[in-house]
Length: 289
Image (spheres, rainbow, N blue to C red):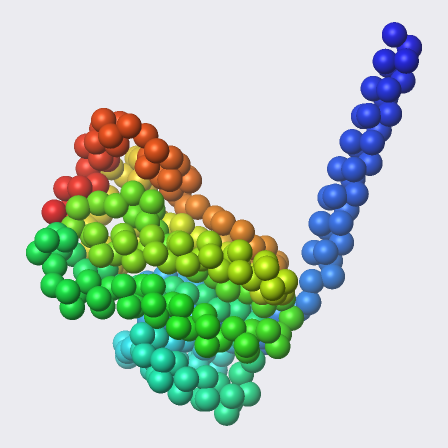
């Protein structure tokens, strides 16, 4: 009995020392984080609802922002010195290369890339034109990959480089009327997973983060979710603040907002009857069908 107590005491002592060491290391790493004041980041889709919020939050944290989008509204951050809006079609490699040359000319050296650009055509899959489908996949998937590949070398020159991809709850569980958006975001999810493995294989210092998000009130999705208790609408400023704060603190990983998105992948493994019940209860197939 005495021997058991003795061994248990040592075990508890070891666990306590281990936990103190782990948390102490975490706090030490935070204390040694480089100052990001004045550093620059690149945001695709900067003129969108989430993009604008990301730009605004980045400015609040003292970052300089290079915003890429195909067009800008008159009230974009034109008079803000810390924002550089560049017209860029991310689906066109030549347009991305011109953007890179422009950044070199102004000596911009970003340490992070946030892929926030997206389009979401509303149409049934059988009624959708091949042009609509291709445009959606090009912007949401191929375009993001173009930018990631093009900016990767530039990011390597900075301290704690970071790439952030933004996918959707619909990447895990598609809905009627938004098939193109769903499949493009599912493809982006797969690309992100492959990139995680490939960067690990080559021991790349670039960190990766994936944010899987529910619906915002925006031009992408004009209609509200039918069940706001199960699927509350997100506030773009709140999400942007979380993303930028994690970026500043060098936190990476996979993040899900709101809570229900975390459980969306599980629905794919459920029996079809349960999936149909979830669809009926949420009303997700009635919004754009």
